Image 1 (cartoon, rainbow, N blue to C red):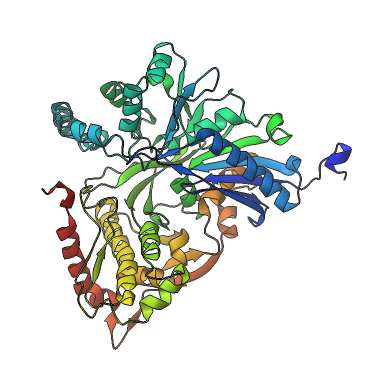
Image 2: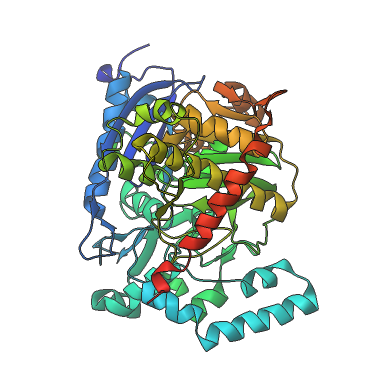
Length: 529
């Protein structure tokens, strides 16, 4: 067995996986046992050119991507030629447009946090056009009983949806308008841009999981929505080809990493985390607690039509098999903890668990974590963040406990909506993300849900999920049953119950009701004079 220097490559092979998140890019090298052999990460710099606008420099992101791949392979002590395949997981609904021939970008990435389309969202949601559309779709649903018409009758635009941010760009960037007219424009989310760069412009594609998170994709018909694109004047010609999640998208140009590495999976981050947690069966639930909370349930081979604001997503498409998810999210999870740290309520995030358990309760103080409004089931973008029930006896410890409790309360709220709407029996719950390292939040969530929750041994599930899909594509791993055996669990959190105290859910019933009153008081705040 020779070395690469002698023109040979060592025989053992590995899977490369990169996760491009909101604040960082991480790359891991995985072996057959799904152990991490090498890692590298770099920060994603967010740009704030104007109030409410949040962007990423595409060239800086590309350089960061190449750097972490090279760094992870170097850290592993392996050779680039030993990398059997590459998987990519990316944040969703962050997009850009560029010249299809030259690769010249027309603007920075406009991220999912960007608020520049706020006015467009308001005017479209209240427009006669949308009222007419909703009315017609309700009638079609009444006549046909096809759920896709019910879903269309419930469409409400938000700034988190990519659709109206793209409309803003098409209306306000002259260079982009000209390129569209001349047929020279490419549109893409981060994954599409990376594929374009890795293949030196040969591939303009995305996968079903990323496409389904754009709000211009029809998850029922599994194609770009001609109706929505026509309604919003988005030209279908600029959109990428949608491929299976497990697919050979192309090969990295050898000039980038020295060897041609096959790109075997492209995946949206929450769906990748779901796959990494091996939530392959109907009723499997994943709770990711990071910057925000994302709760996903596997709904099998049918998309879920939601009344309360759960989002129907394509989880993944492998071969002919499509798996759908229903997702609820709560903004302001990790960001609320970071805000409290900036206020010096504590110096180290690791202290919060001990601080919260140092007091018996929050002394009647309730925190509403709505720095970005309230999502499902309340769906109020005008809600404000607030503390309620403050009194002279309130200490920092009570405030910290109230913040941590609010995360578990939102988990309970999302879980109840999910149970009520999907009516799918829950088979297992797994949690990941930075906040799940907090035992207080995990235990309280288990108590409130009345369910066992498993926490994995390591938390970068998006990276692992993209690696798993890539490895299945190359034959590195045989099937999903093999992947389940590779999954490791750090701890199980069981709902507590004692003869003296009874069910914790009963104890917290009054506290939850008071917190829900605080939510109601915080709603519609920014629409008040």
